[in-house]
Image (cartoon, rainbow, N blue to C red; front, side, top):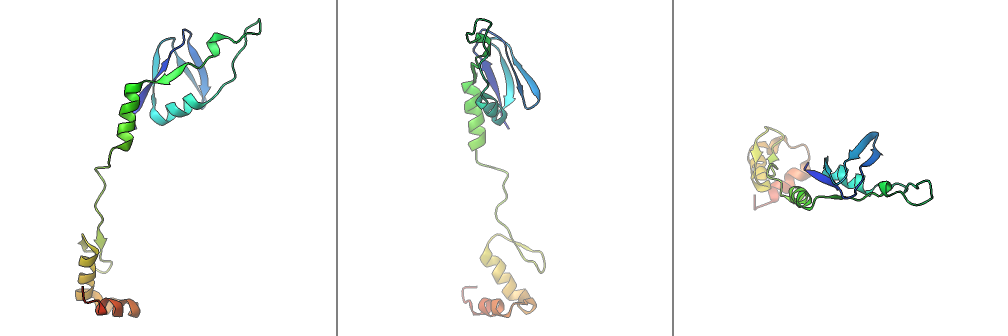
Amino acid sequence: MANVKVLNLNDYDYEEMYNGTLIRIPARGHITMEYFEANQFLGKMNPLALDKEGRIDNRSYKMLKIDQSDLKDALDELNAPKTDEKDTVYVCHSCGKDFRTKKGLLTHIKRYHQSEMADKDARDELLDDEEI
């Protein structure tokens, strides 16, 4: 899976416990995370901390985002067509021979294995089919 940069736009370092790990992002810096993990990390909400005067502490703001160029690359990788998928292969369970089409498999069964078929209705249906 693609890695993305998580940017800290705040002027303060950001620290958070996430899934049992302390995540620390330097001020105006970045860390690299896996795309899905980064999305979950950014979506997790934490309460804002207050300073001693009762105002919201600027250090507690979660001013983080995923770098746009990395985001585009990660989404392109996710949506890319799979090139390593095999084409559908039909296999004869009697002899193990492979066929590219269902019709090729049925023709093979009709020619070489019809006597071995246990289901008589299926065998009769195969023999009655004139296209095979």
